[in-house]
Image (cartoon, rainbow, N blue to C red; front, side):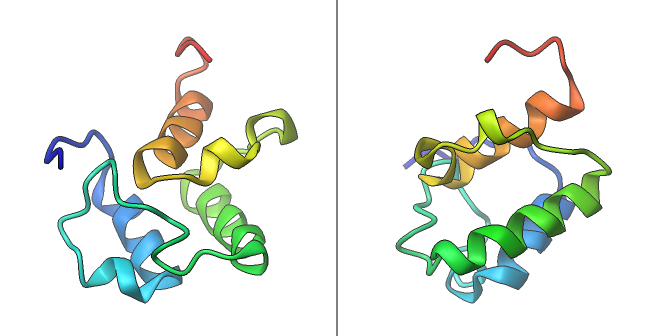
Length: 89
């Protein structure tokens, strides 16, 4: 399991607030599975709203395929691309 991450505390706070099972695994690693932490289709919408509000970004629909919600790291990659549009897709 990797211990490197590039996100800030705000990201972990949003995830832990939505997915209490992740809070037990802090510090989070990029390969923590979101579905095994309790993310379901209803929680996806709320999580996106919270991330967009926390980072003042709008995440385009084309970024929101199932692979975006696989792990903590894959979702952060989506958020990071909105923060730095020069980041490759």
